[in-house]
Image (tube, rainbow, N blue to C red; front, side, top):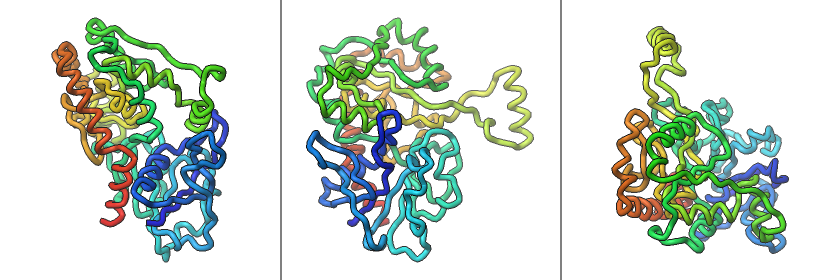
Length: 361
């Protein structure tokens, strides 16, 4: 399978344009024996010069490739000029795939020009919202870097600190809701670990500096060590909404006005729920907390089971998980199951296999 990636060129740490989903997919394709190429040399894997995951190649004809992939990062940075003018050619022989990993409710994948692609791989897919026909649920998932750092020198579950790691850089409405719940219900059982990380150039290895820059300041070895030393990780994220939020019908508008005065509607959906933290927590062997995926419409290609692979919070009944939190044997099983599930279905190789099967289908 000849795969070509259009990537946003590497920039400084504060403008990195990190193509995480492309890195994961390219790593998996290479593991399966394919050699992806791209418009730029992308993702330096080591301190060796030119040791790039994706090697630069200038095609004479795009049709020499079976599939061409590009992502919302190009749109986030308003660099659509990176794409060739004929990429949407109606007579093209290649499959065209767009990875929509953008934040927000209405993301670049909704734009009219992207109705022309064969597949829009939609991160943060929630079945409570209506999507265009070419949308396919996708995910952040794992890269080899995450797997390596999250599993090296891992501490046995029974020897970890009995704490909940909850140290987010970015605030979401869901995170604040769960924080308020945790203060009342969960932190009395396990204290909160809110230590954060900062870039310390003198104490980081050269490869860590490279990864820190390429990921847009998301790579900290100390963070992975902290994940490996706590039994629970709070990995919630996203913006919660009620069924009336986006609707313009008369009943919805009336219900919305009444709810603004006397709140009676419950949150039933979440957008922008996926995060690196969720996948890092799972593969680190933490008992990972999020909301109940099924209840709030969170959709992945392979779904985890609440109480088996992760701890899913019901915002309407947050006491429901207290029994689980108090049972360390159950937490240990959830942590083990979650790690195995993530590696089985969302390692780079697994993701690449799913991608190729999608193209064949």
